[in-house]
Image (tube, rainbow, N blue to C red; front, side, top):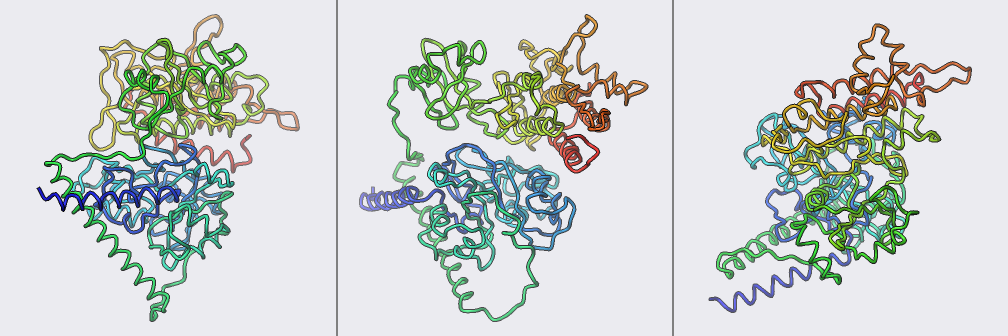
Length: 636
């Protein structure tokens, strides 16, 4: 039926797809224009710039920056860091402002964030609590977050319908960010700054302000040329060779003076209207083509996937896909010969432990773990989660009924090994240990609250926390992890796992899990409390004292309740952290240790409902970290 019309439809559809494909070849990312300001876009046929930036960078996660403009309610480092989930100390330092200093309205603030791949898109994870009945997805994305997120991506991240938002609802808000591509990295690009376009901004002026070439901005955003129009409250990526400077930001704007529009302003308005008109026309055309295509298929919607490639090693791929199905993201498949070459034949010199070897695969330093069990569950989890503080999976191989998983290489081994190293000057730093505690806490907060579904790790301990060569802590070993239940409002609940064998590590398992098999994010909070104790004391979760077995959690409670708690805490601190003053006396860090012990004690509460969330733990630790860096009475 309608053979000619359908033939025209196919031609038009092909041209649209071809245009999109050609543009992707020339651009690192696509400028979304005003499409981010609407709430009716779809990405069912592939990633759309109307949502977020596509995962096409050399790395799946990176440290980067976004620009936010101060506004009432969010006009200080503290309030902005909380809204955008950014480290307060780093935000204050890079902008050269105090934590509570009020900023003039519309002042540009550089916000450091962790950018990571989640599904098809890069995003920096933030959250927002619905404040009033007037809050809508559109208002939250365009007003509160100023276009740093998009209406479509927030809707996609949350379970609430467009008209179902209620005061108090917790929303996940993905922020627009991206990591440099391989080509950009080869050109020396280290960061892609997410710049929030203001009225009268143009590519030439922005390039001069950030001291970059107009060509780099044009290429990074898929513009046709330097004269392409920028729309306010949208974002563009600025490729930077180094971190942005506070001198490159604008500190507020003078009061707006209403005057007759200049010729340039009239042209800007004209082009904005033209852009909106073109966008609306394309949207209508897309809907029309979709309906025709749907009709021509007899009412069956067919999803088209572009860009999939046939792998040469099809035999290995087929073998592994029989065991591991439904990957959320592409996974590198290695041949066994590659692993042998990378590890020098799995030589003893490259062996890190009984089943783990160090190697270099396709130019990347990795840890290759050999396993004789089904890896389906662990791989599925690792393919769904991407965060700076979680050890990432690089690829997989199957050979002779054994599986080999290649993870990012962590140069300092486990946290337990790092703490035990005698000749380790970095382990004497309170600041580094607190930062590692924050790393673990951020990783757990992501697992609990920013994945769909949320996960409970179930086996947090100092051996499952690995330390990178630059002394950053990352959570590993997700083999015990379980999806957590949800109330439908983003908050995880507990559930019984009593039918399964209790599995975990002695000294870290929460009481309710040992007694009833009760699984919830609060069991990870309990285990984190033990890990924090290890960072404070240097002791293991279960250690020997006077020939008897002592649990670190119980020892900490006794110390804090001792008659002379100050002296007891002083003896409880890891001797490596008890530094000597140049005059010869021991620096008293019992006050700092007590604050950290109080955080740990809250995590170790017997009743899980009395334990804090990981978000609350992060807030407490950040306050301690800030004091350590600013208070001269603390040893660093």
